[in-house]
Length: 418
Image (cartoon, rainbow, N blue to C red):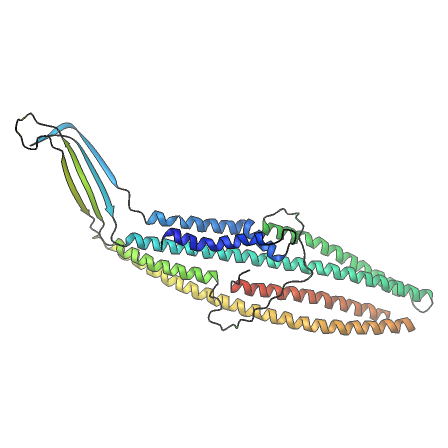
């Protein structure tokens, strides 16, 4: 395969990814939009792609013939020959590696370029995962602020109720004081959460390589799309760029073995020697002053075999090392995939529990408020149950975030296309 075809084959995938950003609406900043912006602007992604483009440029370097050599000699003191004195001499020589050597070098280099491309894909996926994690953190903090503000309003309503009961002589002023304490706690929590948003926004905008003060559109919900692929599926990680890169690396080493073997064969040199001859003052001399042209053949003699044998052994060891690397990477992917699946299942189970408990807690609070309206007792229990309700609602938000991050990690491990 020519280097141009390799470039087109690999580069077109990146171009498709870049062009995807222009299909999104500028006014609607969704997670997909942010990922598209990062693909275009993130310096880590751009650096990895430039390394791939640099790797593409190695193929023409290794697949070209050595530069020919030209030797020119001029004689200060003429060397006499039978047909005249030699005035100057020119020698041109071109060396040729053994048959198939250049092709093997080109194939090995092109395969290493594909390794660089897979590294770019993996870098892109890692950055995307970091963006998703930060995006989920922003969602969690934003929802918690909303819940705390709703809780503050509920406490304000409770305060009016407790104050009304106190004025009617059916309640105690301590109930109002208790609410004021809870309201102060809630106001402080809201401020702390808002303060926490700032570093997260800076982190998120840094991943996009944009202005640190850019406004971020925070969603009301996270896109939860589950992947139900079984863990024992043999093709589970078939698209993972780490494994694909190691496969290409092993293929490259196989080609390098051919190169190492062919480097141990002779190189052949073809050349031409041209001598300028001056005429002699000899009448009737045959070929008088005729320039001399002499074809030349040069063959290298690779008789020192240690270095060539060492080259082949080096490649064999590198190939074995890469096989072990691939198995180690696959084991880690399997382990992370299993743990992420567990985290998804755990988050789903907890959400179901929290939702049920939230409904029951709301019912209990309604009953307590009704009882308090009649008798003016158990107000402290209302506040405690209300705090439990807030904890359940925030825990549901955190479970949503955890499920999204775990699912995003699974997508990263199996290299699911965005």
